[in-house]
Length: 416
Image (cartoon, rainbow, N blue to C red; front, side):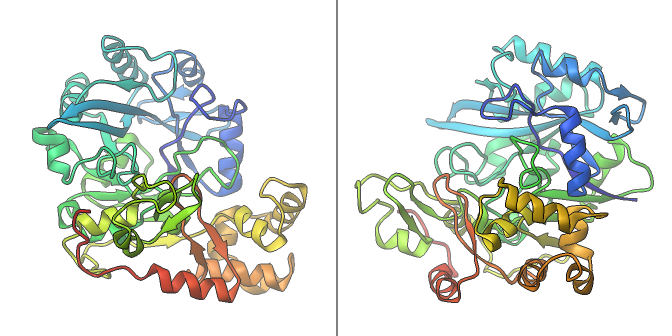
């Protein structure tokens, strides 16, 4: 049984999320996308947990909606503290096997601060202490470092992160079995760090709305005889996930370096020339993921481990249509074309499996060409930076410029 999962999501009580986020909408758009397992999101929030309790719980560790759609108990926690005289801000995804365990986790966190103001609450707890405390509550709890390269809030982030996973989790590293790539990195980039070899590489959307250009934009594919919480955790521990679905890392909001306010975007090579300083405002640039990977990598570009899992690099269909039709992603024009293409299919069917001749029956040749190029990883992306998403580019002249700028040094960049 193949399971396409998105186990890092948020509910309507999190900050900067859609107020229409509900389990009904999550289920509806997960099916449209082709995702068949979701995290619950935000299980520590006092209002969202009441909605979670309406799901049906059984002894498999999976919760089900009234129509039988499966969910895994999941939340995200922000750990903000000082270690080695440096402010650290690390986000982690937490998976739990049952509601009783979730309630114990919440009580523990309430002893450290508030949980009612956000679905992703902040606590002044070091990562190692957090893992140790949760494992005492229930050894089946799983902690996954979230979007590990994001500059501001992650394990390896340029603004507040660590240089090694061991420094982050110390003696509790034995309980970490997976790391999440985040939108601005993909498995290839993470393969360049030998310190990450022991861990499963997973991808999830970190969605703040249920629309198909958000839900499942990154996902992890499992294969198992029976869907259960234990089997999911077993796959993480044994590095036996089947594959991941990623957006092109350049599409992520922090792939390259830059300053959004100054409209400055640099490749790592260009940042080095400017010594990490914005030429407009003369302040330090927000250093992105590609630069940070180069700093920590101990392997050349192109290295592939023997046990590397395959991955699909895809731009969401709505985003493709927005570029091709030159309309906003949520406009009626894009929705109409999306629904025409999708009849009788889900989005992952369209992006990965539907034959070209079948697609030509429902849409025009230019759109079909874009879908096939997307499937074959032949679309170049203008890299995102400092909170700005990347953009798919079909103009040949702009593509050439991107290709020229994207070339990065093979060796470590070193410090500024």
